[in-house]
Amino acid sequence: MAALAPLPPLPPQFKSIQHHLRTAQEHDKRDPVVAYYCRLYAMQTGMKIDSKTPECRKFLSKLMDQLEALKKQLGDNEAITQEIVGCAHLENYALKMFLYADNEDRAGRFHKNMIKSFYTASLLIDVITVFGELTDENVKHRKYARWKATYIHNCLKNGETPQAGPVGIEEDNDVEENEDVGAASMPTQSPQSTSFSTYDPGNMPSSNYTGIQIPPGAHAPANTPAEVPHSAGVASNTIQPTPQTIPAIDPALFSTISQGDIRLTPEDFARAQKYCKYAGSALQYEDVSTAVQNLQKALKLLTTGRE
Image 1 (cartoon, rainbow, N blue to C red):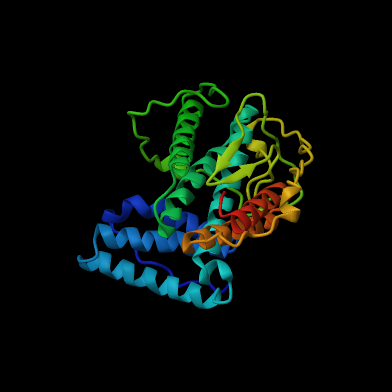
Image 2: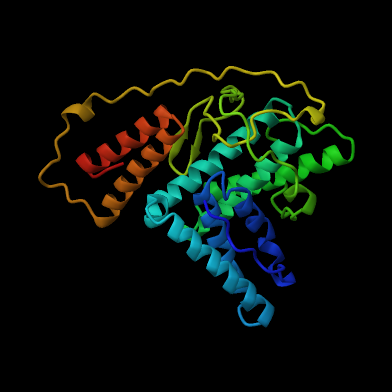
């Protein structure tokens, strides 16, 4: 991908979007679709904050130039031309990054890459708002990821051992953004074949992230940090992922014929299309179980009018 023209210095008014822009830069080569939507979020948010003062207008104008350049380069990418595909791509990427960090946390492997992954997952959930309002579950994942990143960062900074896995979070206290957390180091590229740790089903209920069932041992994205850096002082043992269990297919779906009195609404068609897009996005990560479950949901909706 061609290099983008640099942005002018960030106006102080736009401090709240600085980490989203940094995430965009980190993903220019890693995942240009993620980079594009991070900039789009920053653009939309910046316009709401201040679009009148000269320095802010200049910055937003240059950011718009970057967006237009990216859109030309990615013009034939469905994740850019179709919002449903783009939303599915971003949600899956954020989820896989969240799962990687959560797996490391549950295994008691605390390091900067894990902290950065938690924090970046929370930023990407912010970005999902370019497609509309977040689900309650997305909101909970975002708050938990951001809080976990800050909690573990502060523990390590103070020489304390963080408590692994889910711990209580005070609902009344909003997590403050931490410059050190957002700037934690992260490799620009990581091995593609490294295995990842898995969830302990006994300690965690079945996950459901915006309607997608997450099987134990779901893979993290190809460019998610896969190894504990040597400087972290933690032994990095490769853990083989649990083989994926393909969900049983309801035999009734093979013989189901849409009844004549079934009337599907435009919303039904949109939901079915979304399930199919989620399935396609899951297959990009070789997540067969999630793909099958979403295709079954789409088929049931189209043939019965019910989910």
